[in-house]
Length: 206
Image (cartoon, rainbow, N blue to C red):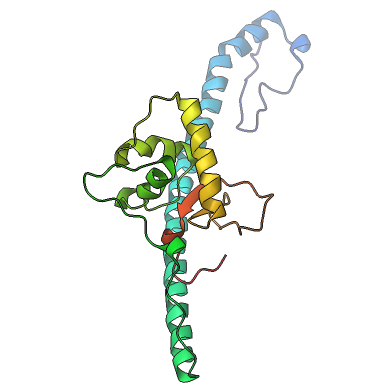
């Protein structure tokens, strides 16, 4: 008897298209011998797809970082242009930033007096210049000398409460998932990350 040739295509078509009930015992055995090969074909496709995804993800993250850097340069240039126009028109220059926007600093060897001060001090460290999640902030507290014996869940809860107060005073800014700032008047949008107000691009208005 002539054997049936069984194939497996990437789209998931297996065998020769006949229903298993139409196959003889010999043909069924031949099909079963090829099952492992079919599965491995799909695994290969999965691995190739993951490799492509990882490459695209890395390229995307790199592009987003470059876009944000470019946006910062645009804002700085816009600010310089606006300042020059103000001078031409005889308008006074923009007032100096308020105390709420002053840069959080932490003197060498000093320890934050409270949680809010510790949170602000985190952004004074170069490695924490970017927006942070609540979990990032809780983990970084030790780097500014803040110590507590509270449980991890309790720390995160306290951090959320402190962030709410800091956002209310404008010293910390809430950010959406895409990195855009949430205006203080917006009470419905959920913050994904936070950043010190002093870390926002110069001239950005909420």
